[in-house]
Length: 494
Ligand code: ZN
Ligand code: MN
Image (cartoon, rainbow, N blue to C red; front, top):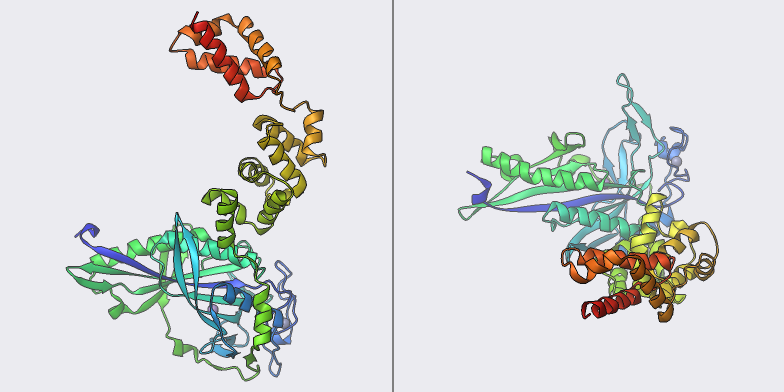
């Protein structure tokens, strides 16, 4: 039987670990440095020596509350730590300090733009925990353990299974990256492993009015947006096919299982059936006091939450009339969005500035492997360039040339325009002289433009080009077009 006869509904939840942007670890003072020499950023606490006492990093907690607030979660006034036991070389204590039954926040939601609409995904909980170390398998004969990462503060965000496609999962993850960088909660650098994703996926299949649920698969430890999309897409199809081949392949019969993503083959591979929570032997951490959050502290933390990316995007669409896609691109990087708004405040022309950001500046930024803000051009000059373009002092071609000069000089756009002779000529009399000159020098093209229907369009374009050339690019192309059309019409009328 083919999948066409079935109704299938993917049910997807996400578990996401985000590394917090603290200077030091969650329960000790060891610095967090990516790429340091293995086992050089460790101390008795994060090595799990007997008799040591952890102390909570207050900044980590504050960043976590900020993120949970932006995710519209309820913040608990009382929260505690728990030990999650497991035995693994990268976890020398043999337990991870995490939060179990009393996480610091729960019951939120996150609105995610998906195409032209917005998808609301409910957040089950957000809690804090420490990261484990890293096992290195570079050498086939031995496994090496680097404990520099041990004790790194992680935010674990767990969604409700509200996501229904690979695209929605992808959109959630990218939008979350935007959010946490906006909030300054995380650098969210994917290359450095600051975000790791674990989608839980199954499919509800309806056949003849009966709903069958495939086993819930957790795909472990994905570290790129691409792999999230790939793994979810692959799993949806695989689960449907496996159920079709074997109708006992259901949640009821098989429970949950873990799979890993093979990035090269772009498939998931079976790892093990999943332990239930009690296998971890959670129990309250005796070495840490619970955290009580006063109303005053909470109010203070919640007061400095900036405008969130999606709200800002919407505002720019409304205020500056940017398209959703352009607004999303500009808002995607907070410093760039700040620069954009500063340039408008400095007298820039919104729509023109938006066009120049997306067409010119973004291209240059990408070439230099940075953001628009990273190009280092100040708001005043960006604003001025857009204003000069919008009021017709320079044309679009001249604007691009001036922008080029702005990249490696501190001169104002006006100064560059004057120096390079790029101020647009608005003197109609002068433009008429150029038009007459171009007509006189190109009799064949004039003839085609007047009486050869097949070549008309091209000949007219050619003549426009000649006039622009005579003006050294300074003529206003719109007025030139009007003058040419007028002259051609006169000639046609005989
Ligand atoms: Zn340490
Ligand atoms: Mn976790």
